[in-house]
Image 1 (tube, rainbow, N blue to C red):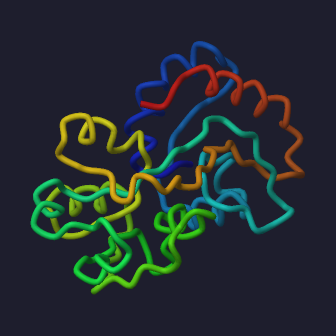
Image 2: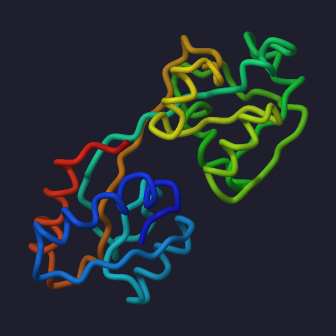
Length: 200
């Protein structure tokens, strides 16, 4: 199980290599949200999940795969019209995220260097990082997004970093499985293959 963006950009292109490296495994993919994936893992509807979601149960175990860096971004055209150069500037902007728990924005908000809570004019929740990215590119708000997801747009100048002097927290993509699953050695082998392939 994995989220849509990571699955399409990294796991789908990696399937042949995974099957060659682990011919004894049948590897299928399931796409869903973080909470849904972890629920399906707990009820044994999935064998393992790749996620950066926080684990709030001792019933699951995780193996780190890749560090996930984040960047606070807005469309160049939007930020030219309405800069977000100081905390007070947030009052002219809409913050976009996947849901009302602000799982992406927390990588900025919980940074020790963050200037305290930013007060946005509005919030928008889109359920999927790819949808957040699309709305940000359209100039409909600002958001914290995984760097791998917006690297190309940053390079081309379509997106600009916001308050770039503030280092955001990072996270890790992890291979998560049930602690009582007897196949831990198999998951460790799979994790080693996944670690050897950078996320693009």
